[in-house]
Length: 165
Image (cartoon, rainbow, N blue to C red; front, side, top):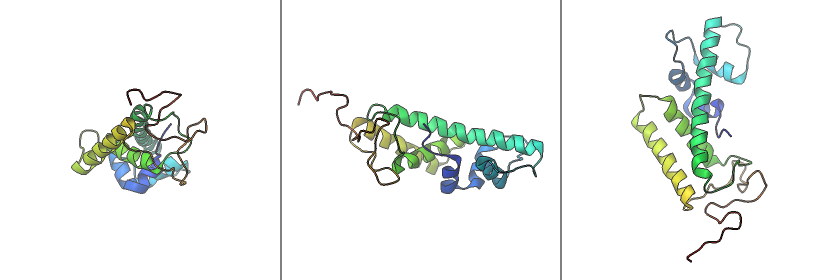
């Protein structure tokens, strides 16, 4: 499950930044407008075939960064809550966006981007240990699994008992 979208990254960081980070073509064919149109599935026939191909590749780079961030998030959440989540809590989407941005920077990560990535990893570690919760979904509802049960980070799962207490 993806916890962010190219559009949600653009709302946070702008199409200009996503374009700069994802257009890895030698000719830098992709404009922010072309990347946004490609992500939206809009008509891009006014662009050359080379520009369209570069935009598809750039969008694939953004989607791969989101996929990588979502997979890393799942590796932490799996020990705390059953996956997949019905709705993505706002805090998970926020951290997914910052993590994807980190992955998009490749070898040129800025200090701010690195700190936000590290903060996301720290938060996910706390969720995995049960010392932080996912909070409500973006709609303000309790986090639920695909089975419909209300989830609380750190609670015993599937009938497990806390032993030694």
